Length: 245
Image (cartoon, rainbow, N blue to C red; front, side, top):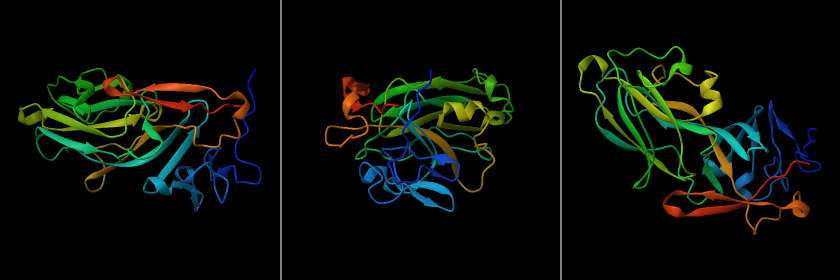
């Protein structure tokens, strides 16, 4: 039997366009749990002003995640050979209550070479491909090591960099690597990283939100449950779970 969720606070908007906005997020004064969870609704599109006005694609109470569209620099393109490189990617969540979700995201490399995603000096995961030649992937469900690889993430994290080592053959000097919401990637709802304007792709990424003792969790006060989220180097972050009613 499915429970009916109590979404927005009483008197607050529960949707912005087609996106449901549940508490602890909120639109308007006193509709959110703290300043990090303010949602601006502009032209029926929700944004998080506390995170550089990232566009909100969805909010899931069950998974305690908010999926946002991040501006991600392309680490390489199809016009030039892949160079060995390391680049800090995405946004720094260091001061926020958000973490990059390990369960809702995956690491993808489309191209030829070896890619590693790092949290400071700690390896989160790595991915390698073998290629004879490379063309833009037409079926992402076939991403199993030939011109494309994908892998799960081992921990939650707040900032990441990607190290890329390209193959030296001239005809396979092409690649793009990124962290991405696994559901939208598998559904093909991700912009082709090689078919964009300029040097930036917009990639959907899922963030796990956390609630602490300092938050007034009135929605969940009688059924508060905590969860320990494992970070790298043996550290962890504790959070209250968002409860469906």
